[in-house]
Image (tube, rainbow, N blue to C red; front, side, top):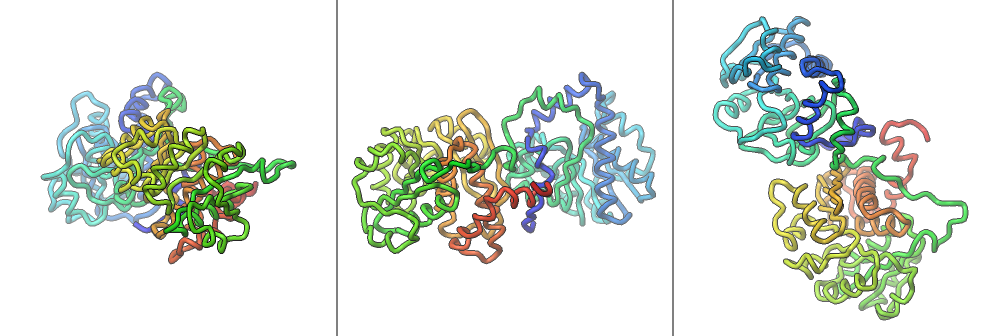
Length: 489
């Protein structure tokens, strides 16, 4: 699906992401707050019907209903659309359990029934997928997969059947929907790939779930949107030292990587940025005039306590990273570890313990921690605990985990951000925010968001050098406010 820069707007006041188990707890707790489950099911059906009618003209529609509550929502959708004159047929995979809320919704459907079969799906102009919800416990295949595969257009209730709402992974098969309507809060699988693409346009509907259930669940997974973090602001008496000093270790070979990280730290607001050249200082001196270049020994640079934030890894080389990172950590410095630190400590994550933020891409993560597998959130959380560092797993759906269990999933990055040097820029942004006093998880999450936003501003066809000037707008609070449709500050 095409990149949609507005898809995060509905989450500005609802950033919490609920796993299927947490959503189950919310549903179970709702009656104790005065909202009955049949009321929620009716509201869910109305939300789906309303979303469909806003986008699709009346047409031959087949509701594919499963035996659980997802199917119950489907029966409610069928009845509500039929009341508006839509030609509706329901195909039930299996009848709901007698006495269940879904059975109550099914009993209210008095219209036509059809076999649950691929031929029926192929005849319909629109199929409503209400077979399985986000809490899928088994792979989807056989008749269900064949029937959904035969559908021309699909609207999914909660998630497309076959999509794991917790991980975003496909269990067996999952047919892509052009529209997915979900309720109360998104699931992680709505933002994690490939789930995000399979959902198509995603509508988050308010169905009257009491706010109290969210407070009781206390979720720790969030969509990465402004509000999770606050960007640094300048006081009247701010000066270059109060804005922090970032030092980037610069290697002798890939000098562009350290230069990009240093320039990004400056654009992110650090008051002073130094490249500590471990070789070829002359090359670094031909760069941006605002960046300081030093050939002083590392031990000498560490005597200055104002040099608290360091970037170690971009273009450094594995051997130099293996030698320097332990020195920085032993000195108690705030370190952003990137690029070559993951080659330096491949298979030895304990060597990274004590860094403030680690920013691997998938290959680098696997090199150190092993392949993340289908449940990447769990893998990144475990890596964060193991290293006592914030771990930012880079990708189109970047995951940022803190040792205390908090996770942010970033969806601001357009596909054209995948270009050489973009990771070096991200490391520099995070370091620049850390230097200004942001806590590590917040700095990493904010860095991922503005990194993606800068790429969106730079536009399709950008190269990494285009990111730096775009950062000025991406970090502007007024620009962020406007991009979220919040009106003027």
